[in-house]
Image (cartoon, rainbow, N blue to C red; front, top):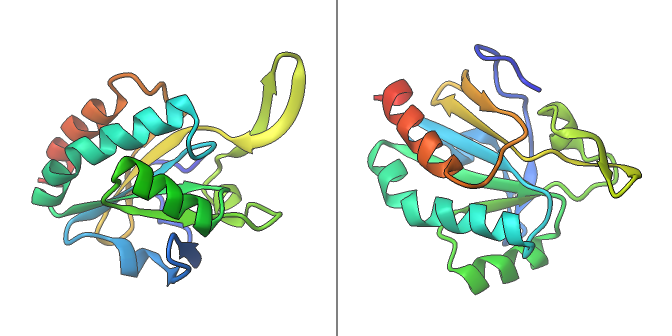
Length: 158
């Protein structure tokens, strides 16, 4: 988990179109929200993506872009974007080492029905345009999360 005030880890990842993206490519005029989620087309992840979709105009009016990251492939991301009309970039951290998820501290041990495995812990980060972490949301619960991120972004960015 990244600490408030830390600098965004460097990354180069493929987006839904297979294009390599970095922080500089993705950030808005005033900042970037990166949200990590477990899997495309699962109930919680779909609801979270749709909530960001529904507020994207508000984020962009503040000069802030939104990017989602999971271990799904670029092709799966394309289908997810098309199916739910998502107007923002999704990055594919689908290398075996989960390099980006590791760097951001979201690739962690999880438990589900007694099974222990490694996976993405749903997490959101707000960065300013220089890449300084303004706020982190670990172990996110989807309900009302995007509304909270939007309100905090208004306070932190503007």
